[in-house]
Amino acid sequence: MGSPSSETVNAVFKAYDVRGTVPDQIDEDLARATGRAFVEVVGNPERIVIGYDMRPSSPSLAQAYAEGATTAGADVVIIGLCSTDELYFASGHLGIPGVMFTASHNPAQYNGIKQCRAFAAPVGMESGLAEIRDLVLSGDFAEPAATPGEITEQDLLDAYVDHLLTLAPVKGRPLTVVADAGNGMAGHTAPAVFVKLPDIELIDLYFDLDGTFPHHEANPIEAANLVDLQAKVRETGADVGLAFDGDADRCFLVDERGELVSPSTLTALIATRELGKDPGASVVHNLITSRAVPEIVRENGGTPVRTRVGHSFIKAVMADTDAIFGGEHSGHFYFRDFWRADSGMLAALHALAALAEADVPLSELLAPYERYPLSGEINSTVTDAPAVLAQLEAHFGAQEGVELDHLDGLTVSSPDWSFNVRSSNTEPLLRLNAEGKDVATMEAVRDEALAIITGDAQ
Image 1 (cartoon, one colour):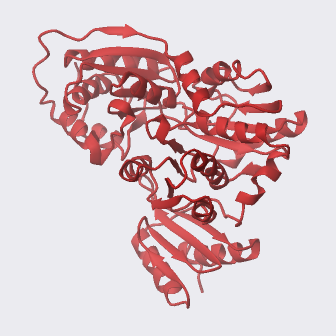
Image 2 (tube, helix red, strand yellow; image 1 turned 180 degrees about the vertical axis):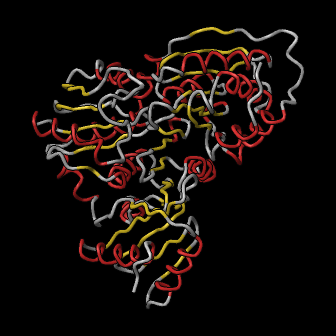
Image 3 (cartoon, one colour; image 1 turned 60 degrees about the vertical axis):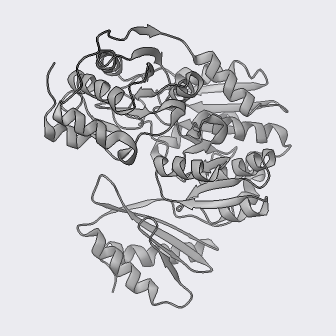
């Protein structure tokens, strides 16, 4: 077995997962070593479950990882092609640690490894990933198990679909839905879901599984990747459009006019539905969601809990507060009834269920949840992020009625507007998200902050 270089290992082990290019950074040797290390670090479980996406490199990397895990003594259940949330389902359903081979929305040359403990509990740098990395770096593994584990296969797609439909049953008027899988894993899971929803007409876009992404990147947070979906919704007169990322753990909505629905709006809608099941529960939202989210949670009797951006933080806070639901402005939605894991398909089903129960178009249904204009995320390349953040703090902190906090980057708030600026974990970027009481207010504070970020301030 080859030994991955320390430079490569340090490059691909990120805050929440393993991610890099194939085969120069991620290859079978790295996967095999990571599988062996994972079993040791998570406490030598009897079994683990592995799934993978449609990228050409995924099956062989998953097989190599399984070989490393069996060397350490664990049995391996391979569920084959699946979405990331189907892998989380498998971990929760079987009660064992799980491993997903995917690079999500990244281009074709990438792959990656998302790992979790039993019942989909996250493994990030602060919860085991650093120890896995260090063991891969050192190669100081325990002796191979006296009896290696066995590799078996199991199909859990139908069980996954049935579980989702118990959590968000769709009943009511017929709907026409356009879904864009972006040649990613929703092309595998969506047909299995919608075949069990006879009152919904499904119009599919790019359902062929193709890890080269021939039509557009499977990254719906970028507006250019939604153009085909928006056009198809308008062309067909559909009630709603759904856009999934490559591993289908994120979902974005387009309304009947072909207009993008803010993930903050969908967060507020789902929070309202979930609070209807458990009045008074907590709902977690990250700090770049609209201020409408905590307002609506309170109005519906819930307790909003604000957290940093990132799934490991969301899941940890959900566990601490027993939150029923969590939403991120990036299109990740987390459900207590789904082992606190994120599921793009479950979020989509909640939206469809709410729409089927209503007698108005999606835009009207969502209007009460869309209170404040948002800028969307604006990325700027900077050479000295701390210095820019200090400039922003000095400039805005001197203004009357302004509050500052540093939970994640810098958040600046006033009664009429707010914005957050955060550094990227992986690139020399600052990410700006702004909102205001109206479009003019939002644009004014957005431009004032951008002038400082880009060095154009007078």
